[in-house]
Length: 158
Image 1 (cartoon, rainbow, N blue to C red):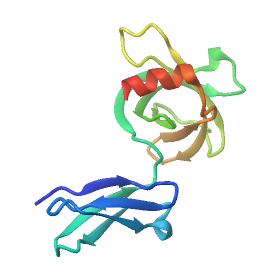
Image 2: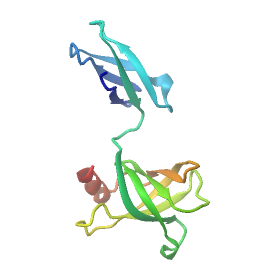
Image 3: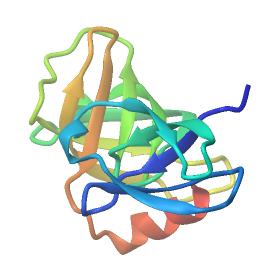
Image 4: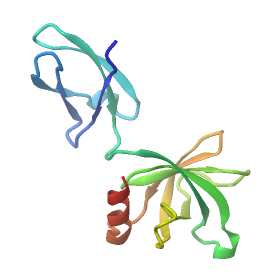
């Protein structure tokens, strides 16, 4: 069985799918599916049927396991608590915390981490919390979407 193809939704809420059998492409509107992860069954003009996973994220997200720290934006650095950065993209990150917390959606956090041992620069970035799940996973979007120093390091890493 062929694995599903994965497509990221563009600004116009469409995906451009490519049939692996005949190599033809076609545009599909997915505007009505926003906010949910979906798998679609697509039938090409060549009659081949295939499954595609659609992703509404704006950028690729990489799974990682990096020790780090976090605190609410208004807290002092001495109040930083430990976390594990579990995924990264140029637009945000996901962390798992190790203890109960009062973090809620829309809170602003400062998250710090080092991508690898060789890298001297520690990333220290502000994120707005977009979701908190019961398993202590927090998803956040970078507040400053235009941070050249952070973005340069992340783009190279990703």
